[in-house]
Image (cartoon, rainbow, N blue to C red):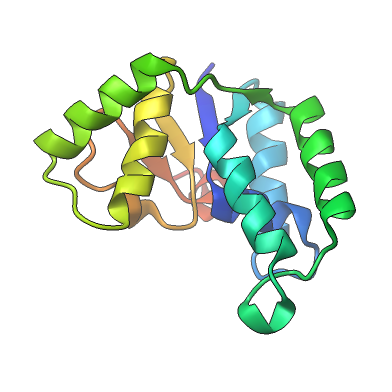
Length: 150
């Protein structure tokens, strides 16, 4: 059994049926669960979901009210384990960004990787596998690869 962190872009598509790639994400998650894999979340993912969900539609968000967003996050937390972002994750992050010479916004992806690695998670289900290139110990998998056996 492998444990997969669900990236924000996957969770966003999962929670919004009208979103592009919703069916692919939903099918990939279902297939991973049926195969006995564990799926987990990080607090950062839920924070980023809140940002997207409550942002106005014209600002590339869902325009959801905070109450609906809170309900969705509660539902997600009941379905998936939430990883700990304790001090070990920060230390791992600092080592990772220095070693990989991470710059700018990629530090957010490196933070997810650090949380994963500090909890023994090496796989992430993401629509942007390139975001995790060069981060040692992380295997990024696109939902379509789950469906095609890749």
